[in-house]
Image (cartoon, rainbow, N blue to C red; front, side):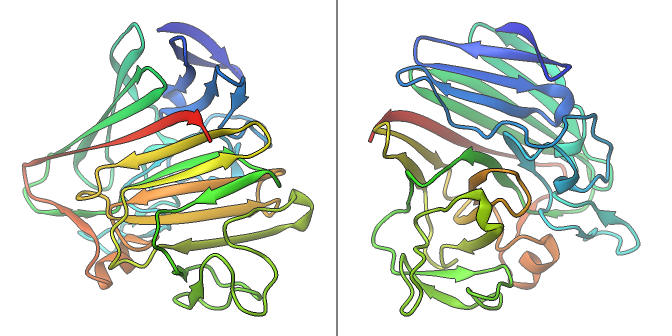
Length: 306
């Protein structure tokens, strides 16, 4: 583990013969870079907006739109489940808070952050093992009442016309969750990967000049444990896998220049369905941390040949 600087912020590089990963504790424990050394390919999107310090309660799209952030305990802003007079901010609490270094050596580091509106401590260990980045999470309740929550990974991956989104088979339908003139209203069922009468495929992405977006989920009754991006021009693949008992849902976000200045794809395993904690609770698909208890889960990102 080496100390580095990333856009003026202190960071750390974890490195082995297969991967180089950069993590910035002050910026919500952002994973700022994931380089696949076999190809030299940078999987994570670089900043397209100025990188600046984050403050609790900031709006996500006002920042750098880069790298891999942690969404907890919601994605969309919503009232606290314990006190409706208090609000959980946009994209949750922890992406805009500094995390504290607990341990770091070799190709491993452990960071921790505590909640403000809700009483918890979230710890994440990042470690390299061959061509795999493994993230292990430890969530501890400091509350005397249960804590409903929604956790989601939010990696903004580099994407272009050579990128293919690979979701687990058999998959014939997805659920649209973002109001859109082409894809329709939230909760509309879409045929996957191609809707009749629509030439645009859901498993491909376009140029940022399109100024377009979409987000869809795998149907919630169909648990999913992995998904991948294939970069066809270089013959490389990045597969995400995760603890599907804890996080049985998967959202896919595509930004073709709508918010970022280049095309990005986010594969978002999540513990709730879907983006607002309030909505997930209404759907009876939110996770709950019992009072005084601990929950653990993991995510892996593996680089390899397509």
